[in-house]
Length: 466
Image 1 (cartoon, rainbow, N blue to C red):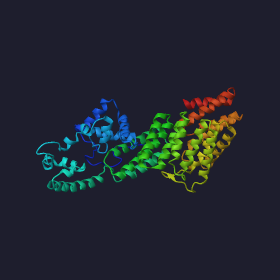
Image 2: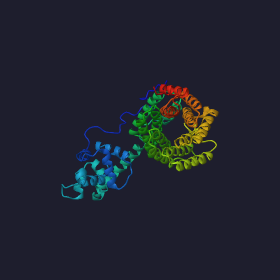
Image 3: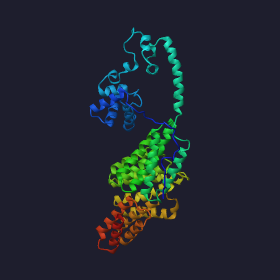
Image 4: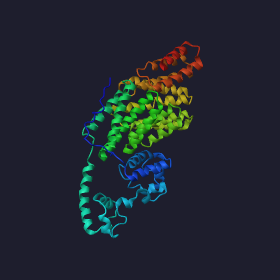
């Protein structure tokens, strides 16, 4: 049984380590929000308008939305986006941000540079220097500014290393995620989901807290791993909406961190979720998106090609399916003798399963039952010979279901029902297994409804669904 104390699992944070300030936001921040709301734009629409104004699609909308939230709270000034905001709102930067009054350089005194400079306090003087307006400052004042700039640079350096992330945080995360990954196939998925979700929430808190640039990238990686696990757990629990949301989140954080292999794992989850929710076109797109990021010498590259083939089979596209299956076999044959591990677990069996079990499902959807039978028997044999090394032992049950469907269509209802019954005796029952068991039940009922084998399996299936 899992126990977890989330609040203290990463060490104590320094007192006052808060990203956002409190109190009333600056006038320009309140103006940004007011102008957006006056046009009835939500933050996603605002992000798209800013992208259009700049003519670039980076950063992505989801990332830009987070920045917009910070700008409207006044947490930081949108230094590189003032022109884009002005274009989006069809205003001038002066009208929107009041830059001249903010700097204290408008009017007053004798109109000279020295007079204007005397009207601003040291903070605004630093702002003027940042915006390149120091050319108007008198030489004596300029010397003072440069002295302040040296002190300011020291503060920048100090803040670059400021962090609320404890020294042992990433060691703790590695151990926790590895434990969750190992427990995926042995513990009740609802319990594992609760633990993984708690850790994911804690990582999100750390992402929002002060941290270094390198720490930020690593936090994004761990966020992506946890979301990938949560996607599979939600999928197994029969909640595809939550599963897809976490898979998308995993891909986004992995992409932001520049982690190609992790992007491939997230796409792998998306492909399966789409397949089991009868969206083969989306499954094809997700699998190919993962193929583009997967290292060729990694088992995930084999798995993604086989999943893409399976999705093409759902669409009745035999040529594309068989071409991808050949590609998966070729990559599988070229895998290194010792494939990479995933949190200490050998990933080789995942590739072996991919080139045996996924083709079985594909050929069933193509109504090629003899080839489906051969692949399903091979998948079962591979698992039986090396059960201890399979990181997903429950999935061999689906291979047995596929074997049952093939045998049913080949005229062997007794053997089909027996294969299905063995599958339903799996110690780990998950939504994909229930779904495929429903396909076998439908096949047996349609062709052999009056036989005892079909009736017995139907009763077992109803118990499983219940």
